[in-house]
Amino acid sequence: MELSHILDKSIESGFLNRDDIVFLLKLDTSSDVQRLLDAADEVRRSCVGDEVHIRALVEFSNFCVRRCNYCGLRAPNTKVKRYRMLPEEIVSLAIELDRKGLKTVVLQSGEDPYYTSEMIAEVVREIRAQTNMAITLCVGERSYDDYKLWKDIGANRYLLRHETANRELYASLHPDGNFDNRMRCLGWLQNLGYQTGAGCMVGLPGQTVEHLADDIEFIRDFQPDMVGIGPYIPHPNTPLAGSRPGNLEMTLKMIALARIVTRDALIPATTAIGSIHELGREMALKAGADVVMTNYTPVEYRVHYEIYPNKRYVLEDSSECDLRLRSRIQSIGRTVSTGHGHSRKQR
Ligand code: 5AD
Image 1 (cartoon, rainbow, N blue to C red):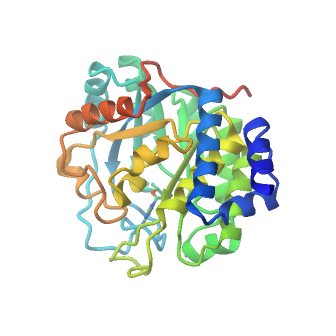
Image 2 (cartoon, protein in one colour):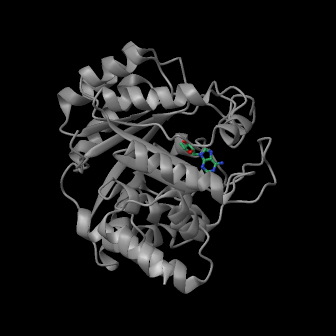
Image 3 (cartoon, rainbow, N blue to C red):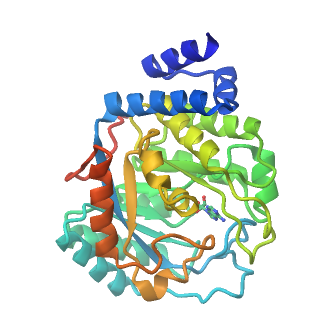
């Protein structure tokens, strides 16, 4: 049977051609889909083991100069209350997270040129000097020199989702975006030696199975160290208001395929998948994921980082979320990592 053959190949080598990928994305009975998710869970177990890595997320500014059609933080959305954390505030929060035992801080913002390369560098330098944490940056498209400076002074990782690997779909969603520049940035980050994260949304308006196959082929060929995949969730104050949200099952299939084609990448069970289903993150962890992020943005700011509406965990106490998360990880038979959770890819 074709499915058994492709799944055996998936577990053994991970090399899937485009036809295999499209075939797997089109599986429609729940038992066939479950076989795909189980195969990815098997690859996860044999390639990276049972540990789940926890990352501390700090959303330090929700200002954004971009106009991405799907995102609630897009510049023309005047309904968002904008905030910026001061560099000292970011550093002292990071020190507190280090004291709590967190091993990675993810510093994320909209594309906010208010923070000069030197300001970000100073934050990285201080966190590097005063803590033992891995530092992940996620501040969008910047110049090669900015990326190089931050890497040289101690940033370890960089997240820049490719959003969609299909040029036409990318253009339709990003009125001011440039697909080639996004890809160029990803190449620079990888060449500079960052542990580099790519990733995409699932269920974007106009997105087809063929487009999703483009994403998996891109992930297979680029081999990112990290892959963030979540469902698209419509935001009322965007041009895409009223569109349909991404589907849970298709998102799980995409996570499974990302695991199969990368073998050992770090793959988060994203907040977005946890926002469309109560058990979304657990399901993702059983379909190939091995990372979760806890939001440590101070609550007074966190409510305003509204990329999409009804984001989970927005009003909860971070330390409580963290504890609950740890017990949920253990309840599905997994262990919480005590290390940094660095990339295992040799380059
Ligand atoms: N729904 C789901 N994910 C979104 N993102 C942005 N807007 C949305 C949305 N409406 C994702 C993008 C971005 C990441 C920070 O959040 O993929 O890279």
